[in-house]
Image (cartoon, rainbow, N blue to C red; front, side, top):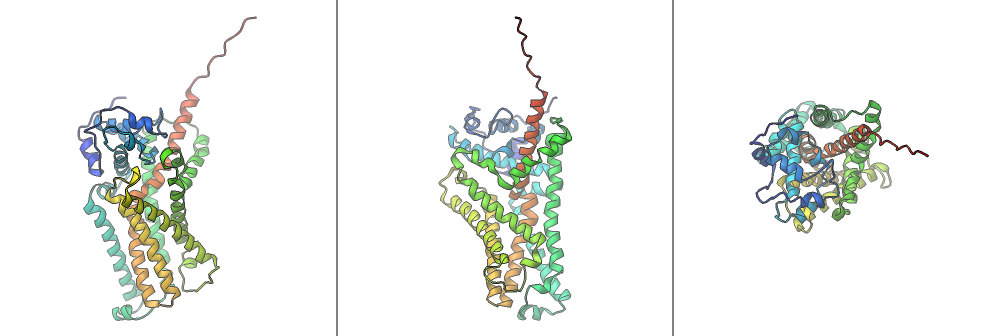
Amino acid sequence: MSYKSDPTLLSEVRRYGAFDTAGCFNCGSCTLSCDLAGDDVSFPRRSIRHVLMGQREILNESLDPWICHDCGDCSRVCPRQTGPRESMMTLRRYLGSVYDWTGIGAKVNSSKAWYFGSHVFVALIVAALIVFYHLYFGEMYFSDFVYNPMGLEHMFPMMTWFTIVVVIFPFFMLLSNAFRMYWITVHRKGTIHSPFTQWFFEVRTFMFHFFTYKKMVECPTEKGRWPKHLLLGVGCIVMLVIVLFALEWFQTDSIYPVWHAQRWVGYLAAAFIIFGTGDILLGRIMKKREIHKSSDFRDWSFPILLLATAVSGIVVHILRYAGLDLATHYAYAIHIMITVPLLVVEMPFGKWTHMIYRPLALYFQSLKENTVEQSQPLEEVPEYVS
């Protein structure tokens, strides 16, 4: 199969972040230093060469940038200090935009104005919906909205439907874009010839890496990062499950005793999120580890939004248990004005997309390797003549 060279590819990739190739002389030190790279997934050198050669189709079909788990060993050993780790991060943003059929991902990931503007726009829509709900559905005037104390339970069932829409939208976008990832990286290339049973059996690979991200342990210099990432992931998944399936049990005016499960599930999930995001932000401030020495603005905003979501939720909880109804009402409004943009923008289009693209890449790569193994002929056993 022949591929055309596209001289505009490098400039397009650079719209998504740092991609320094001026000093690279193709020595291969970055690939040799990576314990996750191999014959089938040779990165970051191969991916960088694809960009330099203008091989757009090959780059779009590649799973290599997603197999990378951002440990930074390649940047640490690069003799020219070209920052291949940052280049791989940029390629993940670019590929995420390739998979996105709406075109929103390309704008959000390549423009600061679109990135911050989209968050502010969604937050303003949420604020407008809050005011609209209380003016019309709450049967009250604006003065009542400002001065009267209110609880949380009056917002059901409207809040239930609002939450379902807010959560279903990013999941629909993620699933549709995940299908496009499959179509571009696997189906169109025709590199996997496994039977359906093998596809079904290998789903365990996707599920394992989706819930654990255990591949991080194979990064020799960043083994301690995996437990922290795992706690952060558990906290996020628990909160998503609560919001989607147990919102009325969790968001209530009822005062539960301190030993009640409702309180401790929320406490632990919030603690995991605060610990995980706090560790990330502190690392980026201190800049002692290779993975934190250089940061894109999106590397800051995503953990800050997660941290703000957890902290604002805690504030709502404290005010509610203190009996400050009006303060609780306003704190909750601020809380969802932070949370909804996080879900609607970051999950389907921003940095949070890696939660599904990385496990999918490992799933597809496992199927590819099985296909290669099955296609190799068995060695003939020599006959011995007595």
